Length: 395
Image 1 (spheres, helix red, strand yellow):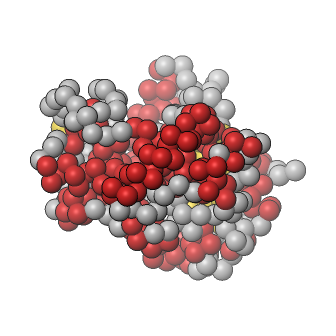
Image 2: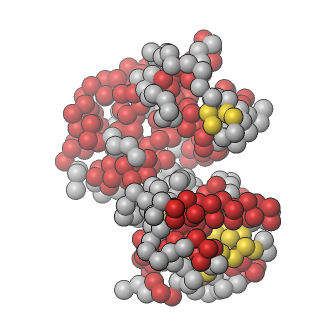
Image 3: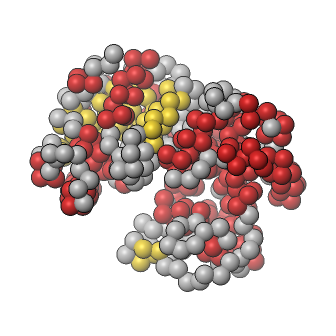
């Protein structure tokens, strides 16, 4: 049995959106020391204020664990811009820096040289190979993928991913650490992924469906159709449609993930011209105030309730069902219940298989037709989807 009590000093490297949220739930989890590191001291200070405000809101709503107080929790937060000092007593380290492989490999090489022998290194990468990230660390058996979902304090999911050389001890200990993090929506759901693939589960499915969204985006640009109208086809305000979510996450992040998928899965994931142009112009969405939408003080500006009557949500889900079947065919997961449960816990939306069982024949035909219309070969139905044989793979 893993002795979780030995994990006393929890370090987060990178104090951006994900890093500060991870640090907050680490404080709520009760670790003795939570060290927040970033190369920019100003970013650390902003993150500290964010964490304190977040804890205060939860405390005022009675959502902190019994006996927890914001002021006391904040005494366990250590702010440190010097990486060597940040990791010198680390038991568990989570990296939350930008999704650029070279940067991650440089960091893991550095901490591999300076962190204590017992430390476990986790990467919060949303798509990239754990094996490749670990390759520079000199401690590949101690490296794990631990993919959180924002807002971390709310959403229950953590994807836990083995690299090719991750030890079972590291995997087991990381699972116990993952289960310590509280979630407002209930008990944590840890998706254990023993074989890595680009995007793991959630992003593998959602980025696959971005092939359809990118095609629609180019069509709308060509025809002068507002992107908001496409979102209105499938969801009503104040909820965010898929293009608004791209803006919320950051168009540069979406672009970088698609580039990675283009390298590792299919060139057809290469970012579309509209997305590339916006990123080149520095229009990254919410964080810059402009992207596919306009934003004001962090809030999206909506201009119309009209619909384009173009975006078909069934094609979106059909692509996700097809990609889920690929994960089954590749042995990434053993059954489709894992995929559906993971999508529900991480995205607050049903996975594709519950509806797919009833609609796979119709959806197969839809994908065949759309593949011909768009010229996108990657979305052609897999054998497992087309035959419906996945239905026997629930457990």
